Length: 258
Image 1: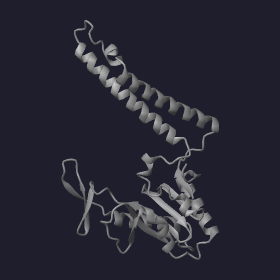
Image 2 (image 1 turned 45 degrees about the vertical axis):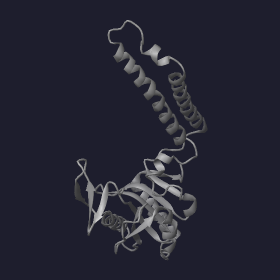
Image 3 (image 1 turned 90 degrees about the vertical axis):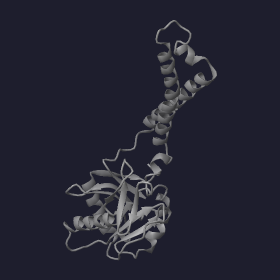
Image 4 (image 1 turned 120 degrees about the vertical axis):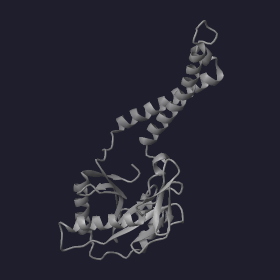
C-alpha cells in the first residue's frame, strides 16, 4: 500500500542509512557504558568530588548522580529511536498513534493511504484511504482517560480534572468526509466520488452514528471489504483523484512501513 505524506522525505541512500544506524548504535553503546560505570565503578564519587575539600560538595555529588542517571537513559532513547527510524522496521513509538500501523500488507496495492492532507481554508484531514469503494476518511477517538461520551455529546478532561464539552469525534469525521467530497467535486462536476467517514478505536464504548462508522483498528481491512465497489471509480479515475491529492499535499508517495 502506498502512503502519501505532505512534504515527505525521500529515501536516503544506503550510505546515509549506514551512517545513521552507526550513530544510533554509538548512542546505545555510550548509554550502556555510562550505565556500567555508574553501577559497577566509583565513577560517580570521583566525578562528583566525593571526599574532596569542596565547600559545596553535596551539590557536586547530587549533580554527579543526576548526570550519571540521566545521560545513559538519554543516550539509549536517542540511539534506539534513531536506529528504528532508519531501518526497515516499524517504530513502536509511532505505531501507537498510527491507525494504519501494520496494515499495509493486508490492504495491498489496491489502496492508497493519505496522511495530513490540508484542504483549502486550512482544514486538516489526518488520514484517508483511496481504493475501489471510493474514499474513506478515518478519524480517531480520544483516549478513554482524556474524553468520554455523555448522552449525545462528548466531554474532555482538563488539566484541573474538570470535564468540558468538545466536538463529537464522529461528527468531526463526517464533516471531514463532506469537506473532502466538496473539494474534489470543485474541479470535476461530472463525477462525484463516494466518501465514507469512520473513526478508529481500541475500545468499544462508542456507538456508530448514521453518518460515521466505528471500526476497531484490526478490523479496518474487513470494514473496507464490506463497502460496495464504486463501479464508476475506475483505475483512471482513481489516478486522477490521487494526482489531485498529491498536488494538494505537495508530497511524494512512499511505500507503507517507510
